[in-house]
Image: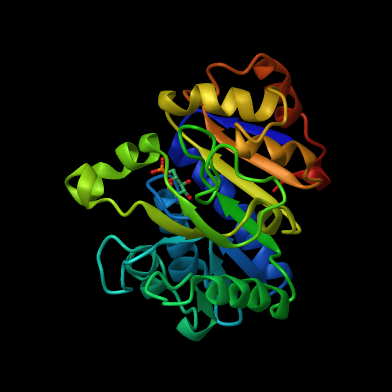
Length: 260
Ligand code: GLP
């Protein structure tokens, strides 16, 4: 695991964007796994800048989003389908036909989830999975006690996640309680993973994820088993890490060939 601590979310996002850009340059047909939420917005902004100013080319890329609310259509402003088009896709030269997000309006959830898994496999698997993290350690919408081997499926949100997302919907009652999410097993199959976490409110869950035991109670902790994972965190989110000085030393002394 590589723990990259930067003074601000802005700087951490810029470094993370470089990892994404390098992947696309090395493999123009890369398959990216993408998150939503507040955390990746600066990363998306930076990728848009790299596209506009440096010609970063998304035309051959495919993307798979982590999750979607059940019952929200793609034109609903709170759907993750909408979020992706509105925050990222419409500003870069990605072919929308190559972008995928679970269908929250499906009337056959089981078949839709299986088709999503099949489509990921047909694309050759996810080359680089980008993640945020929920306040109780969820990745995608894999809430605590999700099977660490789970695949794409329906999940019920915890009261805490519903509360965390209430600001977008106006009231607790308006937040959908069911979602479709890639499973933890699906995420773990990605060849490379980067996780972004910013702000003091993420410090406790970041410490549990990186330095705590691997447990389904903190789903992100399973990343300790991933062979190629990088955490991009700001100072505030790093506040409870016991080995923080070590991570900083490692990063500051990376051999040149390992820098990005
Ligand atoms: C939602 C998403 C997650 C995201 C999390 C954190 O639950 N399904 O993918 O990581 O929110 O959101 P934020 O980045 O807004 O803190």
